Image (cartoon, rainbow over all chains, first blue to last red; front, side, top):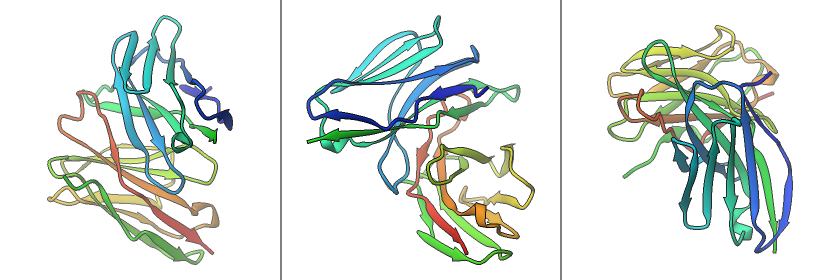
Length: 114
Length: 115
């Protein structure tokens, strides 16, 4: 079983819809949770990161973490065709060396139809 | 502020050859990470360098190797190339200490094609 599970999609929505992207994880050692956006043939771009359970908002994007359920979400309001990309969740845990390792989900491909 | 840069953008090799990929981190970042992203697959962690030392290694054979230079730039070498090595190779960097949040910033990648 993978430490981080993410539905690969594709997820297709009409422009203006609210999009919900999700990841589940099995390792309770994960402490920081991030979302990256990757356009086709480009490197991933960090969107936002959170630490504690709860919500964090940045413009049209809201990241939600539920540590008790080991479940994180990214909501996109008023989705635009320019939001069409692959969204990867990532989680950070402290290693024995005192440094943090990042584990990525496999990514969900989102298509916003005009 | 300049982002992570990678070279070359594209690389075409034949089976059995060696490939060398290069990465320059964001100024002030000391950690460099290498990932492989095969078509349709997620990011597969390859290597992590920090302060010139290899800190962690993913589940890849020894023919994948690398190093980090004193200026924190890094090189990924892939020996005895196989067809399945064809992928986008992404480099990321993070600021010190690598133990805080470890947000990683990615470069545009090198697309390696093995014929």
